[in-house]
Amino acid sequence: MTGRARNAPRQGSTTDFLLAAGSPDAPAVVEAKRVVTYGQLRADVARILAALDARGVAPGARIAILAENSAFWVAAYLAALHGHVAVPFSTKLPAAEVTRLADWAGCAAVLMDARHERAYGDAFGDRPRVTDADLADATAPAWPAAEVDLDQDAALMFTSGTTASPKAVRITHRNLRANTASIIEYLGLRADDRMLVVLPFFYCYGASLLHTHLRVGGSVALCTTFTFPETALTMIEAERCTGLAGVPSTYQLLLRASSFGRRPLPTLRQLQQAGGKLPPVLIRELVAAQPQARVFVMYGQTEATARLSYLPPDLLDTKLGSIGRGIPGVELTVVDEDGHPVPAGVTGEIVATGENISPGYLDDPEATREKFADGRMRTGDLAVADADGYLFIVDRLADFIKTWGNRVSSQEVEAAALELTDLVSAAVVGVPDADAGEAIVLFAVRRPGSDLDAEQIAGHLRGRLAKHMVPATIRFLDALPLNDNGKVSKGALRAMVTADVAG
Image (cartoon, rainbow, N blue to C red; front, side, top):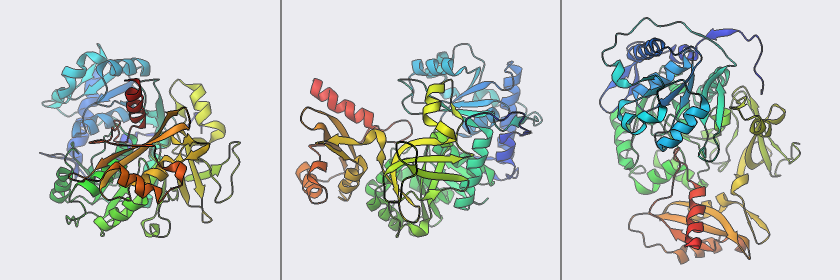
C-alpha cells in the first residue's frame, strides 16, 4: 500500500467517475439562493479548466483551493481532480500560514472565491488564479478528456496541527474511488438523497459527503453557518434533506441546545456521526430525537481517505458505544505494541488495511514509515474487540491521562459527565501536576439558564467513576474551542490551564 504501482493502467478522471450518474437537469448543489444542476456544474468545471490552461498551468499541477463551501468550491475541486492535484485550504488559517503551506506543498495555481481575495490575495503571491468572478460571463467550452493513473495523487489533505509542522496526506485516485464505493454500499445511498452539509469540504469527512452524493447522482445542500443550529434545521425542512452528518460537537449542540429533538423532520432518513466519539447517552438521545432516521456511527481518519468502520443502525441497542467493524474492503485488527493481534477483550491499537489507505505523507518518509509500517496503517487509537469482532474505542493514545500511577481514558470521564442533561458538551484533559503526574481537568458547557455547579458535577462523577478518575478541577466555558474541522481542540484547553498557571 505504500508504493506506487508501476505501469498502472490509466482510466478516465475521478471527476468523470464522480459525475457519471448525474443527469444534466438534476440538482447537484443547493445553496441558499440558487440550485446548481449537474449540467451547470460540469460547465463550470470546464470553464475553470479552460482558465487554468489559458494561464499556462500544466497537467498534474498542484492546485490550491480556498473558498467557503459553495458551488464554486465544488466546481474548483472537481476541476483539480480532472488531471491535476487538489490541495484544499481552510478559510480559517492566517494568511501567513496559507503562504507557508502553499510554498511547502508546491502549489502552482489557486482557485479562490472573490470574497477571500482581500484577506488571502497576497498570500499566494503571483501564482495564476481563477475566481468565481472569472466564470460569470465565460462561455463553457467542450468537456476536456482526461485520464489518470489510479495510483497518482488526486488530493493533498492537510491534517490538524499543520501550524507546528506541515503534514499533508496523499490521497490517490484509487483511495478516493475505493472509499466512495464502500461508503455508498453500506449507507445504501440513492439518487434521491440530499445531504445537508454543515462540515467544511476541506475536511475529509465533509469531502466524503460530496464524493458519495455526487457519485449516486444525489445532491448536497450547503448550510454555511452553524452558529445558530435552528438555521440548519430550517434548511433540512425547506430543502427536504434526507441526510445530516456531523461530528460530536454538531450533535451535542443539536441535542442539548436546539429544537432538534422536538421538531418533526420527516424527510430525514439517515444521520451520520463520525469525527470522534459521541458518548452513548447522546447516541440514545440522537436515536430518540428523530426516530424515523437511521443512525450510523462511523469511524475514520484523513489517512484512510475518510471512513474505516461503521456500526449498522440495528445494532445500536446491543453494541452501543461500538464503532462497528471495517467497512467493505477494509480490515481492522487490534494489535499489541509489537504488532501482533490481541484476543477479544484485550486493549490494543487499531491497525487498518484496504484500498482507501493513503500511501503516506507528502515529502515525509519518516512519518510515513511510522504511520504505515508493513503495509498497515497505525491509527493511534486504542480499542478492544468483543467476541463478535466489534470494536470499542478506549481513547486516543495521545489523550490518555496518567494520574496517580493510573491510565485514565478522557472519553470515559467525558461520557460520565454528559449523563447530566444540563451539560451541552464536555472535554477532559490532563495537565502536569507535581504530585499526581497529571491532574484531570474537566471543561464543561452548560445549557442556557442552567444553574448546575461544579460540586454537583463532581458528586455525579464520584458516584460513577473510580476516585482517581474524578477531575481535580472543573471549569465552565461558554463554548469549547474547536479546530477548523469542528472537533474539540484539547491542545487549546491545555494551553488555557498553562496560561492560568503562568499568569
